Amino acid sequence: MTYRIRFHPLVARDLDAIVRWILGYAGPDIAARKLAEIEEAIATLRDTPHKGSIRDEIAPGLRAIPAGRKAVIAFVVDDEAAEVLIFAVTYGGANWVSRSKARGR
Image (tube, one colour):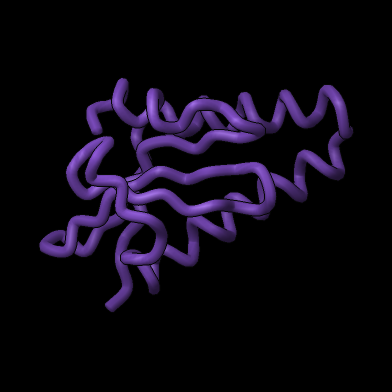
């Protein structure tokens, strides 16, 4: 079964901030490559939504996976709806736990 990917409304802001930050120190080619790595990691959740570490101590059902070398994607799986909800995407050591909690998980 293929799962649908949904995004918390603030994930677009996460991705924009990541790209702007990388642009500032590494330029547009690296920023585009890192964004593509993150997008590829998210896309894999369509077919394998239950991968990653379950972080119930943070919030029930919350999972996290790495994307590339410095990004973390926090998400929950809704099997009944066949959906993966991306709660937060962080980069370079940003606190994905706090961000996920603030967004309702």
